Image (cartoon, helix red, strand yellow):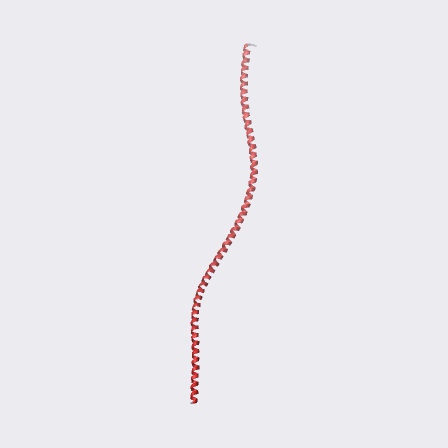
Length: 170
């Protein structure tokens, strides 16, 4: 081999080395890129697994929350029905209180009227009592007068009788 061939071989060898190094660098860079992509893929798969787990857990929690919401709705309906019953009872009691208050006012009016009538009757009773006492006094006086007049009459009869007896004897 000649020098020119050897040199040409050296050049080819150098070229091949530089190509090989370039290819090795590209390969290393591609490996690093692949490694990075693989890491991203693994990370993404882990994220997907985590999100799948979160979705699964969330679905379970959502089911539990829906059940809780249904229980709360049922309790709210029960509370609403109880509230409606209490409101109806309150309204009935208000009506009852209004009726009792009306009756109390009517009774108070009647009591006031009866008190006024009682006072009037007491005044009339007192007036009648005084009048009765006056009439009783007049009756007693009249009875005394009648008794006195009877005695006078008897005395007069006795005197007339005595006079007639004395005139008859004369």
